[in-house]
Each structure stands twice: as structure tokens, then as C-alpha cells.
Figure (cartoon, rainbow, N blue to C red):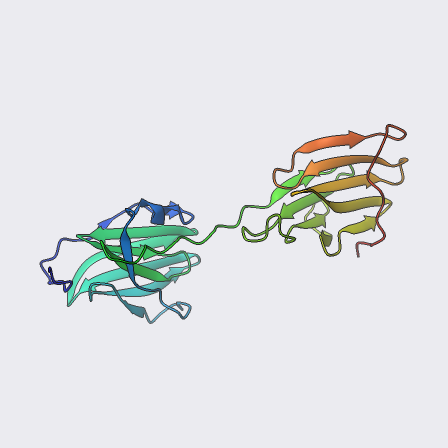
Length: 235
């Protein structure tokens, strides 16, 4: 069986381009074996955090700027490569059967191919908030993290066009009123909808899909069923 120890003559890690999000981990072939986990404590500017890799090499991780981390990979006293994560991207390198991943928070993961355990799964990436310009001229940002979409974690933040936040609603407190306008989150089966009601103009309403922010329904006064008003208040 081939030894997992590395010598200074080892082939230099081939560094992949930084990839936004966690998709870079998916480039590793199925059947890889997870061996070492990431640096547990946050990486602070200055002194590096040292992480021992799956084959006995080490990674020295530095925080080099806002949302930027660098990991110098060493086999003994020989520097093999430097991985750079910036702007929320993931950087990864490879050498023989060793795989190394530098996460956006400075964590380092490494594993050897061909083992009995499965490779580490990438963390789910939270979708970006959806921005909706409402009929009253205000802005709604619809957002939920990846683990709570469709499970009660949906949230709408209401603000003025200049960015001043008026308040927020979620499925536990799904309704609020401001200046005669009502804002609601409504569950419709497995979907969640965001509803805006013009209480001053007679009750016309607009219904948006939460996930996409797309306008999917409109209701005029006297034009059949429409969303009801809520009882909460913003500010």
C-alpha cells in the first residue's frame, strides 16, 4: 500500500480558480474519502491558523483582507502552493490523491481519494434576497436561508426607496400595515406568496411569488376574491 506521507519532491498542488459559492467541491470525483476537517476557530489577521492535512502536510491559513483568506500548503519545509479565497469564493487544490479546499470563512478541508468514507458534502448556499418594487413605491426584500425555504423561514423586509427599513414580517407574524397599505406573507400549499393591499385606494391587491418575486396575481376592487387586510403595524 502506498504511504500517505509526502516528501519535498511531491508534485506541486494544482490550484483551481476561485469559484463563487460551494460548487467547487463538486469537482472532486465520487468515492473520495474525507480525512481532516477545517480549522475550527475563526482566522484573525496576523498569526496563521495551522491545519494538518489528510496526508500529513499542513496548511497555514491567513486572513489577508475583508472576505479574503490565503492558505500556504507545506510538505515539511517545502511550500507546495497557495490557495486564495476572496469575495465569498471557494479555492481548491489537488496533488496525487490529496484534495484541499479553502472555504470562504478560512476553514480548510482535506481528504484522500479512494477511501471507504464519502467525500464531504458542500454546505447549502443561501439564495440571494429577491427585491420587489411595490405599487406604493416602497421596496420589499424577500429572503430565507436554504434550509428554511418552504419550512416557515421566509421573511419580507419592507423599506423606503432610500434604504430606510420600516419593518419586517415572517410566517409567525405574517401581516403588517403602514400608511394604509397592508403587507402579508400567505402560505398556498407548498408555496409562499407575498401580498400587497392598497387599503386607501379601495382594496386592490398584488400577489408575488416569494421565491422569484414575480407578480403572479392582481385583484381590483369588486373583481372577485382578494387578499384580506392584516392587523399588525410597521414601526
